[in-house]
Length: 421
Image 1 (cartoon, rainbow, N blue to C red):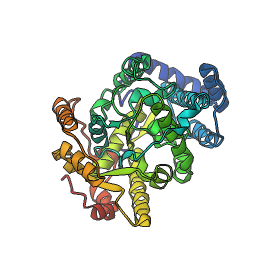
Image 2 (tube, rainbow, N blue to C red):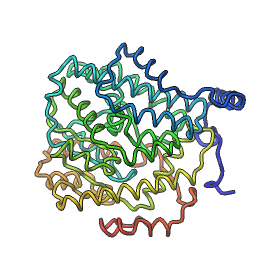
Image 3 (cartoon, helix red, strand yellow):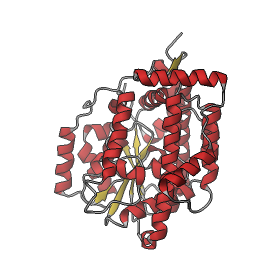
């Protein structure tokens, strides 16, 4: 039986601590007797979040549909371990609290909604295409501001200039990152994370319960199908409200945002941010699909009793195919590429700072000497293998390289994506 075909029990993927393995074993035993024991309750999660936040106003209706679809999908299809239910339940609870606090802050401080989010840089592209590196570099330009990991987890109350570097929420975020590193040490080599580094703004979209990051936690197929066709404009409107809240206490000239999932929803991005400057990163799809499958499988193994590696790889291959298709269709409808800059992963790796300079020239911006020097210093301090090498092959996931190459042939030809061999 191949690696791609076998079902792996939690603990056979990441090396989970003995106490966690015992907890998961207990959970499996209980569920054999009481199959619905430990399932998530939408009503209970909402009540708990309201009690924890001491707030009850979630703002404009509409978020409930995605939330309910997600909870049902988790219960029906997620196959979560006991630990996984705690982790995913905690994620949903913290997302509910984020929404409550953002809505309350905006209500108590109506001036926040008048903040102008002007011409944000929006880094996107398929997963594993260098968006994290590019985001880290853009954050070093004093003219830019990124959403930091600890800010994205809470948003409100927003930090101020006086406490931005010592807010106690930084330590809480760092603790969470440390816990993930203990459960799945290989994740840092795949996707370096830290409380004070720029992060994907998916959690802001998640406030409307319309975000691809929920699917990185487990196999939630019915939610994934619903998410593909839902209206994303309300999610980006909540995303904008979060930026307005953050900007209301710290003056911000220009946001530099990053999430691979934006290419799935460029119509909604431009509906809410009509002057957005989108950077689309491109990479050999054989590397993209293999790397995305490896990272997602590792996260799934932390949360689930069984991981179907081949199934995970097929799902994310199909998601990537859909992403490049809908992103390209949007650009074709627009008829002009002036607001999108295409950047090859190979070019970014070969000349990171020069790539930023080319992005700036395309959008009529200027990278000053200080920004260049800071970016160069950061690259010297953070070599690509700082946290180890991320190793994977398509064979591990039951995918045939020639077949994947053929499926992405139109994408590779359209954007002249070089093969990595």
